[in-house]
Image (tube, rainbow, N blue to C red; front, side, top):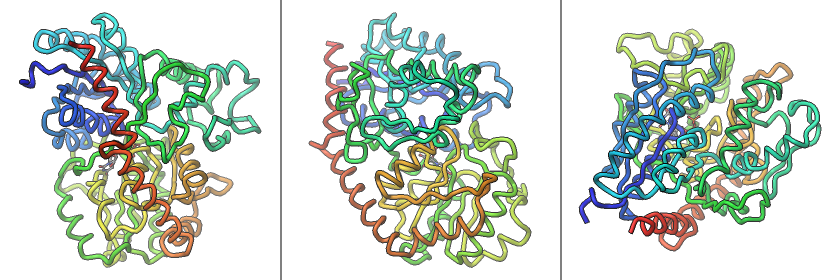
Amino acid sequence: SPASARPHVLLLCSPCMGHLIPFAELARRLVADHDLGATLLFAAATDTPSEQYASVAASVPDGVNLVALPAPPALPTTAPVRERATHAAVSSVPHVREIARSLTSTAPLAALVVDMVSVPARDVATELGVPCYMFFTSPWMLLSLFLHLPEIDAGLVGEYRDATEPIRLPGCVPIHAHELPGSMLVDRGSDAFGSFLSMAKDASRVDGILVNTFSALEPVVGDGTDGVTELPVHAVGPLVWTRPAGVNRDHSRVIRWLDQQPHGSVVYLSFGSGGTLTLRQTAELALALETTRRRFLWVVNKPDEDTASGAFFGTRQREEDDDELGFLPRGFVERTSELGLVLPSWAPQTAILAHASVGCFVTHCGWNSSLESILNGVPMVAWPLYAEQKMNGAMLEVQAEVAVRVHADADGFFTKEEIAGVIRRVMDEEEGADMRKRVGEFRHKAEQALTEGGSSAIALAHVADKWRCSCT
Ligand code: UDP
């Protein structure tokens, strides 16, 4: 059938690269494997596209129609990341309505798919009489926390940060107070907590949920034993972008450099699309790398003294003559030129993790980065920063045993001895070899889940069939 007449899925993604990338992969699969059309709306937070967005948009898969919606008047840059993302998503609803209506004149609309912050757009689906599904781009563990939160919150006395007992969710590692998302560690009476709780409640106001995980990694996902939701929950992952996320001037240089390094010898470091360290912590990490004398590939963001998510809404397009790395310790780049490569801000991560020279990944435990590492069989040094990353780090270390966490000292600082020590554990010792073996087993199970007849492939096919059939 001509593409225009195929039932169409409209996907709405908030301004988070960590959502846009798996959304693009989901859309690609719906088009390539499930006889659906897909339009992917990106609720931009700023008028000028960031380097990150431009790079991802440049390699959106064939057949997926990506549309950046006009940005609303921006919130102050001091507003928390989640509030700025929610603001963009909520403000996008009139555009979503208009696009959805115009789509229905060319093809039947099969479903609206939203992310965890754009659930308010479900009104559009209700008006048009189509189902609204959420694609949850974080682990089941966080979704389970969302689904349980109203009940946990009603029973809690005091603040989450003071709780001495961990939160125990069925089938998940216990979550200690310090591992909770930052929005739960503020005063419960604050707006920031209020909007987090309302996002959590929104999770059960959709018709079904797709989760970017797989049952070998999170065995209780969607098995219905959770006891808090009647919603259909489908594990459809790991959906990661197998194509390099964007090609920029550094891409071929990086791959050529990796080609020259010995097998499994390189420590790859990146804190995701938004992660930032302070100036002092950046310098300490540089010193740690010098101490280990390992080969390294470090994607470094400009330091930020105020927040660990300082690059979240993007870095500006780079100027060729910028002294982009001027914040690194004096002489560091020259002293380590034989050992490592430092890249400012954005790298072809999936191609890097797939390269045989990479031996471990120092990661902020963003869920896409974690899944990409697993799908490439790369063990991790976990250095979580914000959002649900500390929960992810706990799961990867304690439950999956494919990562080792770095620990901060009493002042919240990561010393070079600690960083270097953990890198050594993952790179060389017996412990590292065991982790590499386990992550290889997860890789195998992830690939099985995604191939025809595998659990995630069946789950997605089931949902896609349901959407298509509802249109005929
Ligand atoms: N990414 C990339 N190049 C970079 C940094 C990140 O391609 O230099 C991609 C990465 O492969 C992943 C996504 O951006 O797919 C980041 O998502 P994640 O959930 O790991 O972290 P977030 O950016 O949401 O904190």
